[in-house]
Image (cartoon, rainbow, N blue to C red; front, side, top):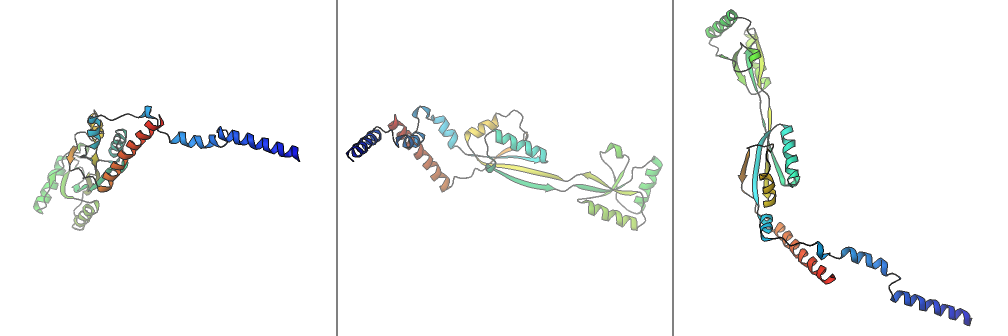
Length: 238
């Protein structure tokens, strides 16, 4: 009995000694404290110019950009300049194409003269087709903003027994996208200005920058306070 009591007392003394030295339970508690510690040697203060650049807000509009490929290149360029996708507002406008009610490609000068005489006698306006060298010579009787409208005009002429006509597409529909970057900082603007051959070319203009909201100002203030507190903690740790 006495021997067992002596052994237990010895073990208890060893445990108390190890606890006081931090050998038991101390290692697990130390790791989180080290992870949370701010390393002051890694902190750097911003100079006044950098602070001003980050505080400056500029609004820029790019485009209109025609087609999906050009839009994809523009978004990739903005991402490389540090502009997040959430900061880009896209405005899309679909422009209709142009279709014409036109004659077939006329095979001879005599054929053309007879067609022109027929339309003059019927008081139907016409004009020579501009461009499209592979379709010359062709006469255009009317232009329409949709293929369906041009087809309806062709059907009407067919019912009047006019032959040798067709629907000809003069311009295909286009999708134009304008990118609005409402709140770029000075650093991002500097990167955009440094681009030598951006996808939008000369299609860039300034717009009215959005005023910072109260939430964003509070967030900025909170970030500044956190940075100050972090620096203080680092100094204390050192």
